[in-house]
Length: 492
Ligand code: NAP
Image 1 (cartoon, rainbow, N blue to C red):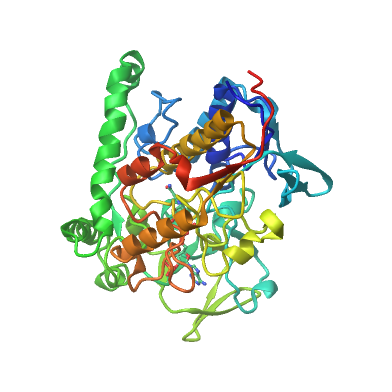
Image 2: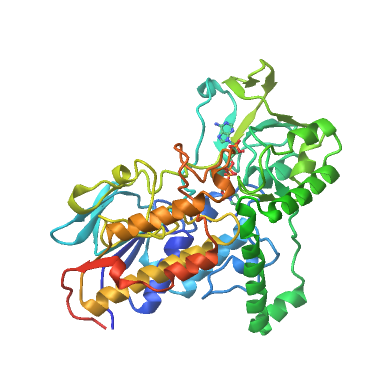
C-alpha cells in the first residue's frame, strides 16, 4: 500500500532515470523528471567527444534490474551507453514522465504546507511532495580563466561540449588538461591534427585497458545463460572492489599499480625526456587512476608536444607559456574537468525556514550517506556529496541511494506521515565518521584532485568500500529520521 505523492526528479541522467524507474515500478504514478537539456542521458549525453567511453567494464555499467547481455565490448563507448539508457526509458515506460528542455532555477520548501515549490526558468513552478536532486557531480564544465582567451581568433570549446563540426584535420590543436577525458580523445585527434600540443599541469598514473570486442558466441551465451552473465558481472564487481585498498595509505596495492603503469609507459614512450614528463610525482590513486592503451603513444608522435610549463596567456593565434614560448593554435580544447564541489549549483535550494543549501554547505558539501541533509525535509540527493568512487561503478552507488530513499518513503507510508528529515546529530555523527575515514585515504595527500574542496575537506569521494556503503544504506533506521505530518489514506 502506498500513499500517492507528487515526486519531482531534477535530472534525467543515470540517477534520475534509475529513480523514476524504481519508483514507478513500486507503484508511484505522479512522477515528473525535469531536465534542462532536450535529451536524456546526463553525462553520457554531454560527453560525446571522440573516444568517449566508460572506464568501468560494461557488464557492471548497467542497472541491476536491467542488465545488458549484449554490450559490444569490454569497455563500451558513449553512444552505446546512451542508447542503453534510451532503451531503459522506453522499456520501463517512463518517457511520459520526462519534461525535457526545462531548467530548474530554484526549489523552495514551504514549511507550513510541507511542499517543495520547484522554480522553472521561463515557466510556472511545479509543486512536489518529494524532491529528488539527481544533477550529478560532473555536469558543469570548468574552464579556467586564461588571460587573453577572449582575443583568440580560432575555435575553442570544452570536451563536454564538443563541437563536432569544428575541423581538426590539418589544424594546430592545443589541448589544455590531460585527465580522464583527454586520455580518451587525444589518441583519436592526434593523427588528424597538423600539430597537437598538450598543456599538462601534472602527469597521471595510466594503467593498460584490458579492452576487446565480445565475440558473437560470447554475447549469445550471455543472453542464453543469464546466470553466466550474472556471475561475470559479480566477478567484475569483486575484482574492482578488491582494488579499494589502493586508495588507503601504505597499501601494497599502490606499489603494484605503479609498477604496471611505469612498465606500460616504458613500452609506449621511447623518448626518455618525454617519459620523464609522464611520470607522476605523487602516489597512485591520489588522482583518478586512468586506463588507456594508446594515450602515451599518441604523445610520442613527431607532431605531438607536451608542455609542462604553465600557460601565461592566449592571443589571437596561439598560446604563450610561462617561459615566453608561443605556440600556434587554430583550436583550443579545454579538457579541464568540472565544477565538482559546487553540488546542485546554480539551483537555489531553500529548506525549512528559508535555510539556504549553499549557506549550509559554505564550509564544504555534506549529506547523511550523501543523500539527506538536516533542515531539508523530503529532499533526497542522488550521487551527492561523498558518493563518488575511484574504483567501482557509480551505478552501484546510485542504486543504493534509490533503495534508501524508497525505504524512507515506505516508512512515511507506514506511519501515514508527510515529511521525513534526517536528525541533525545523526548527520553530524556520520559526517565525522566519514571525515575520519578520509584521513586514511591517499586523496587528502599532496596531489591536487577534484575530490576535495579548497579547504582540503573531502567532499566528493566515499572513503570506505562499496560493501560498507551497501551495509549502511541497506536498511533505513527509523530512529535516524524525524517523521511528521499526517498524510491521506493509501491510494493503492
Ligand atoms: P579531470 O580528470 O579532472 O582532468 C582535468 C584536467 O585539467 C587535469 O589534467 C587538470 O590538471 C587540468 N586542469 C584543471 N584546471 C586547470 C588549469 N587551471 N590549468 C591547467 N590545467 C588545468 O577532468 P575530466 O578529464 O573531464 O574528467 C573528470 C571526471 O569525469 C573524471 O575524473 C571521471 O570521474 C569522469 N570521467 C569518467 C570517464 C569514464 O570513463 N568513466 C571518462 C571521462 C571522465 P591537474 O591534474 O594538474 O589538476
